[in-house]
Length: 311
Image (cartoon, rainbow, N blue to C red; front, side, top):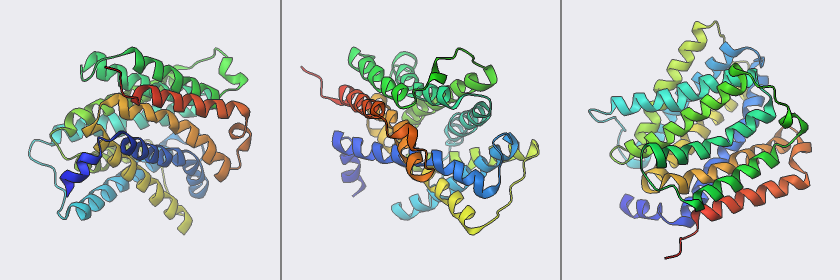
């Protein structure tokens, strides 16, 4: 049964739909995190409590991944002997490195510039897979697709603030470092997932990384109080987003080239802007003519990278 399921994960329409579902979940995380901060009474400048909040979210995501994966496979997911190194490498890159720099960077960076820098993660993932790890060739088609998708990210986040040259190392610089961690984790997940169960890797790396982030937040003086049932529900939903999206993403990377999957990551900011308009009432950025151009550019980039090459 699983063999038949895994064979479906290489079909382009299936890959596209599942990756879009992951990006929809990740896009919903952006406004939901803001709502979560309000429900827990977390100030945007309180980096310690933000890291503690992130740690609790990802540790809970790890538990959910392990439980759901165990139910799906009919057995308790336990790391194999020798899996400690891959799990540690993934948790340090994907969870600790990425979110430590990302949350601190966001506190000192322009939101517009940060959103555009986040769009670089697809470029970085494909470049690492092609030039450093030699997993796949770097073709003109992939570069053109990345340029189109990145153009869409710039369009959806465009404002006069994007033109200002002021950049800060602990702001935009940290956001870029976070994207390097994300790109590296995607490539490592592709490498380790070829010989390990991707869901097991996802679950245990989230659990380990979440505990490390929570420990850092507590050590910095962060404090988190569960204020209401909606707050608990929001934390649970954010944990589900990470558990479901990252596990599916890991399976897609196991059976497909990195470029075919990661190019769809350009839809993340598009979904984030549209869902922010619905959940937070931030409709000014979403419903503009340039937003349609952004969506078309992102779709063009995905099509260029995923279309079958001519022989």
